[in-house]
Image (cartoon, rainbow, N blue to C red; front, side):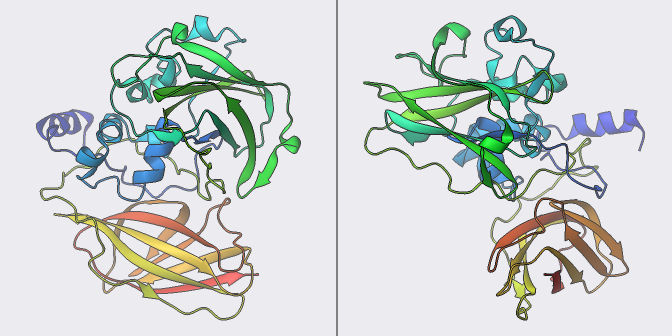
Amino acid sequence: MSRKRMRLLVSAIAGVLIAAFAVAIPAGPASAHGNVIGPASRNYGCWQRWGDKFQDPTMATLDPMCWQAWQADPNAMWNWNGLYREGVAGNHQGAIPDGQLCSAGHTQSGRYNAMDTVGDWKATTVSNNFTVQVFDQALHGADYLWVYVTNPGFDPRTTALKWSDLTRVSVVGNTPAAQWTTVTGGVQLNIPVSVTGRTGRAMVYTIWQASHLDQSYYWCSDIDFGGGTTTTAPTTAPTTAPTTAPTTAPTTAPTTAPTTAPTTAPTTTPPASGACSASYQLASQWSGGYQGTVIVTAGSSAIKSWTTKLTFPSAPSIQQTWNATSSVSGNVLTSTNASYNGALSAGGSTTFGFLASGTAATPTVTCSATT
């Protein structure tokens, strides 16, 4: 389809179009960096809550700020680890204008602009003593990390963030990745934060100056000082990373709302000792297409890698996969783990997903693994 025809099509269906993926099966994950996973940054939180059901129209009601962000550019969530600028040389305020702090000054050709949108983003409840967890997937380490909290009276639901709204509350100096805590898929740094007398809504702003290049990362996390005990941040780092992000809209739009619950029971193959099992779920469907999710679980022993085969009644038309490398031969979709989710502990699980055109069909699922 020509670019002109694509632009006309997108314009015609703009009111109802649900962002989806390009017609391609990616070879592997996007360049992996990191993010604040607790309290979750805006784009990481949207990916965490909606990555497997990004076409669910209930997001518009349940999580409207994430909904507008997905519609603006789904790349911002699938590439939740790419919100950075290069060559800032420490002059963060000079590089990033007021009102654009959450998008790092409209970095990456505006991919993250929706992160600056003022509104009622989902907030993590914290006490006056909480922990900021930074996940470093690429083992960059840090020249430094700065953590800010917005001043009393600032309300992110009504006000765009400015530098003058922030007070720096924690500083971490040069810290090589070897000094961070090793977690699944990378390393993690826990930064304690303590403030006094705070209640109500606020924001955490984190700057991570990576050590490998002059590369600065910027994240906005929405919080609610609800009092009580310290909020427990996630106990494990993300086990999956985004794949190459979509670059074009689909050529047809869903004409009916996707269903949010699987319509068929998962198909599971019991694993032998030390092997793996896999189950399939229909995550959502619409007129002309559907989204599937596959859960891979290690058996009684740890595994180093896995391969699943989904055998459909007829040849599937796979449009996009993520968190796995996939190929189609006849009516079989074969998927192998990505570099970051192949090793699973005994009983551990990971997921991958795909988009397909046509009518949803339930495949037979098998799983094999190396130990």
